[in-house]
Length: 238
Image (tube, rainbow, N blue to C red):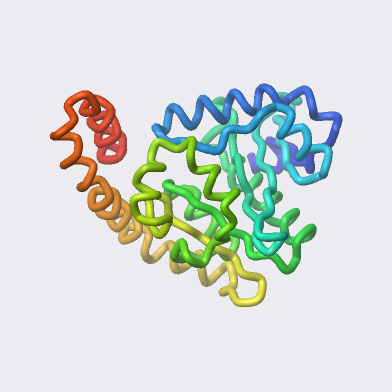
C-alpha cells in the first residue's frame, strides 16, 4: 500500500494542540535511544509552531498520531531548518519520514521561497531523504552562524566535541538546499546512490578522528570511562 494511502500528512493547526505533549515526549525518547541530543522543546513551543502554520503532523488512516516536524528560521529568515522530525515507533520504516520531509520542505519553500534550507544529521537514512529533495552535503561554514541556532546543540551529548572544533565540525553531516544555486533532485539523489557506501565509511572515520582527543582524556579521567565506552559502543556498532 502506498504511503499516501496509509497516512494523512497535514499542515498542523490549533486543532492539534492536544498532541504537543506526546510529540515532545517521543522526541526526547528517540534522542535518548540514539545516544544523541536535540534542542529540547516544550509543548507550548510546539503549539506555537502549530498556531503559526509552521509545522506538519501525520496520522494513520485510523486517526492515530504518527509523526511530526516543524520549521525554524534563523539569520532573519535567510536560513530555514526543518527540525524535530519524529515518527512514532509503530509507524517507522514505512516511508512516513520521507512523506513528512517532503511536506515540510514544500511548506518551507512556500513560506520562505528565498531562504536556504539546511539540516544536520548523523543518519544515512535522513541523508538519503534530503538528497532526494535536492540537498547537498556542505561544510559547517555554509550554515547559519546565528548564535541561537548553535545554542540548541547544548543538549547534545556531542556538544563538547562541536565546541572543541570551533563549530566547524562534529559527528553530524551538514546538508543544504540553496534555491538560488542547487542541483536538481534527480542529480543529488543519483550522487547519493553512487556514493552512499563512501559516505558511510567517511562518517565512521570522522567519528573516530573526532573521538581521539576524548579517548586520551578518558584515560586520565577514569570516572568518565563508562560514558565514553557507551558512546564508542553506539557509534561503532550501528
